Image (tube, rainbow, N blue to C red; front, side, top):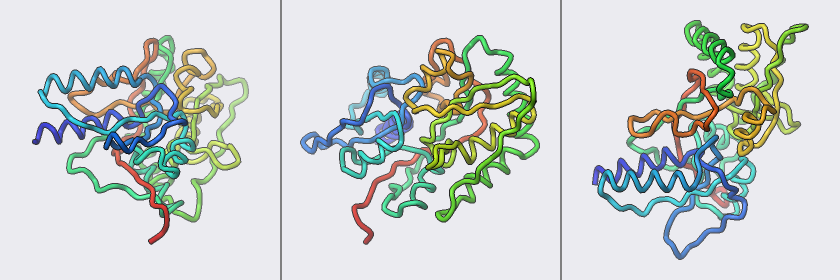
Length: 284
C-alpha cells in the first residue's frame, strides 16, 4: 500500500506542468471514473513521454494504478475556464499560485495536503550556446541568495500578497549601449510569473529580472508569450531566456526530464510545493 501511495504522489509531481498538446477541448468522461486534472505545459514533457515514464514506474514497483488523467493547457486562462465549466475536475499548480488564486476568488479551494511533499525548483532556460550568459546568471543568482535579496523579493511579491492588490509594478533599469537580453514571461503562474490585466509584466518575475539586469549592467526586455510557446520561442531565437523552467526535486525523476535538446538551465532561484485545486460552484 505504501508503494502505491508513493507512486500516486510521484505521478502528482510529474503531472504538474507537464504538456505538449492543447487541453482546451477537453471534456469530462464520467464513465471512466477517473479524475481529469489540468496542468500548464512544461518545456519538453509530452503525453507520450509521460505515459512511457508511467509504464517504467509501474514495471519497477510492480503495481497497477488507476490514476488521474492529465489534460494539458498552454495558458492559465484556458485551464481555469475548463475547471469552472467542469471539463476537468482539478488543476495541479503551486502553493503560491493557489494562495493568489484563492485570494482573488474564494470559490477556488486547495485539496487536503498530501502527507508527502513534492517540490519543484525554478530555473532559467537558455540555448546551449549561451554558456557565458548562463554562468553570469548563476553568479548573480548566488549573490542574490547569499545577500538575502531573493528572500526579500519572495516575501514582498509572493508571501505578503493579498486579495486587495496585485503585485506592484517594477521599473526595469536601462543602460545606454548595453546588451539587451530578451526574456519570455507568460503570466501563467501568478504571482510568480505575473502579467497585469493591462498586459504588462509585473510582480515577482519583473522584480527578479530588474535586479539581475542592474547587477549585470544589461537591459532586460520582457516578451509576453503563452506557456506552450516557451520552448519554440527560445530555440528559434525569439527570446534569449525563459523565465521559468522546472527541475523536479526527486531521486526518481531525472533533473533533466523537462529539458529540451539544445537547452541549458541555470541554478534554481525559487522552489515551491505542488498542490491540487478544485472549484466550488457557489459560496456556501
